[in-house]
Length: 205
Image (tube, rainbow, N blue to C red; front, side, top):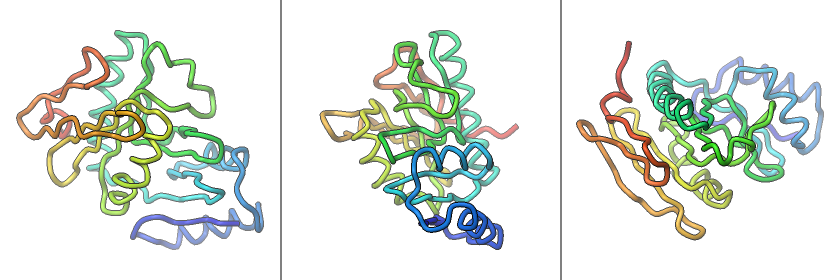
C-alpha cells in the first residue's frame, strides 16, 4: 500500500496514521472506494493519485481564515444564483483514480448536480490557498490536473502576500487572466456577478 505524507511537518500522528492504514488495507493500490471510505472518517485532508494516498498537512489558522473568507463570498453568490459552495475537506473526483481537495470550490446552478453525498465532480471554479508545503503542487500538478478535468477557472491565493492569481482555461491549458493585489477588486472571469475586495479575503475576526 502506498501512503505519502506531503509537506514538511511530519509528526508522530502522521506515522500512526500510516501504520493504521497499513494494518487495515495492507499492500495494495488504493481504489476510489477505499479512498472514500477513509476520507469520510478523518478530518485530515487526504487525496488520491495514481493509486497513492496522499495525506496533507493540517492547515494553519491563518490559512483557514483566508479559506473561510473566500467561502463566505462563494456561499453568498451560490445562494443568490442557485449554485453550491464548499471548502475542504470535500473530495473532488477529477477522473477515476484521481481525487483532490481544493481549499474552496464553487458550482454554478448548471453543474450543481455534479455533487453527491460523498464527493463532487469538477467544479466551475477551484481555489487553492498557498502554503509552503503545497505551493509546488498547487502551481504545477494541480494546475495541470484541474485543466485536464475541464475546471473553467482556477485561483491561486497568496498567504504571506496579499494577491490572487486568476487562471482561465483556454483549450487544454490555463492562461493567467489577472493578478490582483491589496486594495483591488477581484472579479471572476467566467462567473457573472462574483467579486470581492482582495483586502476582505485577509480579514481576521
